[in-house]
Length: 112
Image 1 (cartoon, one colour):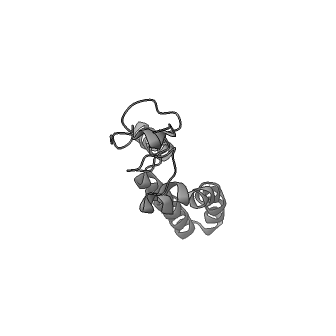
Image 2 (image 1 turned 90 degrees about the horizontal axis):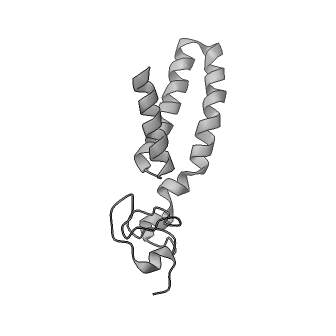
């Protein structure tokens, strides 16, 4: 039980920081849960489908946050890390908290 809680907290932290692995793990586990429940008990599978839909649908709608075209092309705008795409709106350090790359002044929206 404690391991499951720790795993869920790890996934939530990953999602909060915009890590792609957390997005993939959430989608895979959500879909796997639906498939397993449908195979064991079709009546409960419908409940799992509806319940997991409250997680999977918002995740799919937020896919641009994790896999957006701006990250791939480097055209994210002034408030994002040029390397990993993390938002730098509240970052005051000189390095990105996610990837450790030095933050250019233009990335923070400051005048160069």
